[in-house]
Amino acid sequence: MFSHIFVGSDDVAISKKFYDAVLGAIGVPEGKIDAKGRVFYRTPSGTFGISKPIDGNPAAHANGGTIGFTCDSPDKVKAFHDAGVASGGKSIEDPPGWREGGAAKLYLAYLRDPFGNKICALHRG
Figure 1 (cartoon, rainbow, N blue to C red):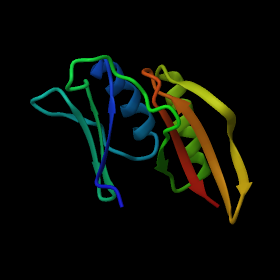
Figure 2 (cartoon, rainbow, N blue to C red):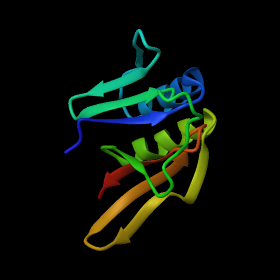
Figure 3 (cartoon, rainbow, N blue to C red):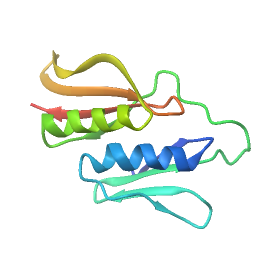
């Protein structure tokens, strides 16, 4: 369904360090910086990007928005979370763990990145 997702950052180097850690913890290769100073993480299932806002205004997170990253084990969800906290992110909501609701059992962990974007790692049980 998605081709790519971008988040804004006021300091791309800080964001790259954070996302290299959290995405690296789940097996995504280090982000690559293009000629415009943007960072891209490319996988067979899509692209995640980081950029300073092109309108020149400060970056702002989406209130109510969440970007979820699929993991193939609960251990990778926990590694994503721990790498994020160690790299300047903030743990939010419940601690990493199993949640049941609707028709699914999920292992989840939620973080805010250094610029307030809400991200999550998810493993379907």
